[in-house]
Image 1 (cartoon, helix red, strand yellow):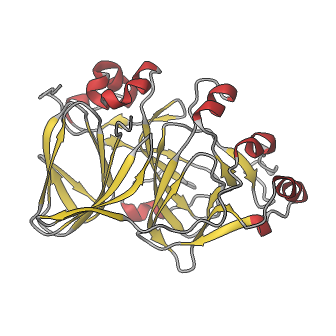
Image 2 (tube, rainbow, N blue to C red):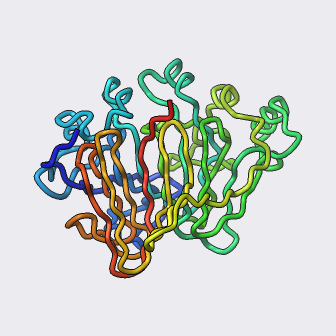
Image 3 (tube, one colour):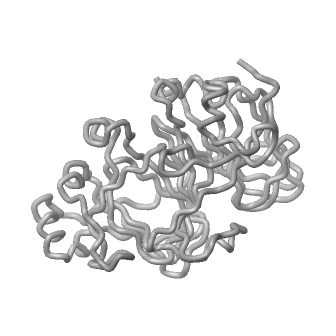
Length: 332
């Protein structure tokens, strides 16, 4: 299945103004509206935010409208389940953690479907783009944590002793399966690749107040239903080398039933030759350097969607570059 009229799609981002944001996304070339900006939804087709194409013949159309027209030619047969539910499979964000995010957890699909209507669960991953000295994340729980003691600590407003902190630096990646207790702390700019979901159960919010002067609501019962208390003191995992040849070095970052993400490092003058044969879309993100995807010029930090049925494509660079490559694999 190849449609030669298809082309790589870029999008105008959708911005979110949550209380923990700042103005740091301007460093990445984002033209921000006034005020605090926490997230830039780069490629999104969700009821809470949908991006518009800003190049080519689909310019001005929402991603949802493009999917309505193209269907599996856009997202691929490996995403047939998403097409049946009229959902785009992935959501790509950049986050400015100018202040700590709340401690939170996301459900899996079965729990979300049972409790959140047509919403999906949320498995995600993070790539650290920029990090202040001493920056850290929260992922998982401390050894010896029990569900009962954890609940009481939330009620007492003293959850910190149960939270496992993880020092991180620019270039690190973290896989965050559904059920992972987590929080992104301050001093970080992070790219996030995730299931197309906005379901979050807030566990703990540092005893702070929202923009209305009131504590933000917690979702304690649902959170305790889904937290994986067996995720004890995890570590940052190194990328796994997949292939190295012709100036291209590919490393696996995360692989799960929802997406596969690779880091692709390119030497000056190298060319990556790809082929979207109808199985899956590919989403490429330029993290460092500048590249050409077919005739489209892309700079850091920029994301592009390659339709599943586009056929052959290539990514070329005159200088060194580092990219993310995300697609949906058939793991059956």
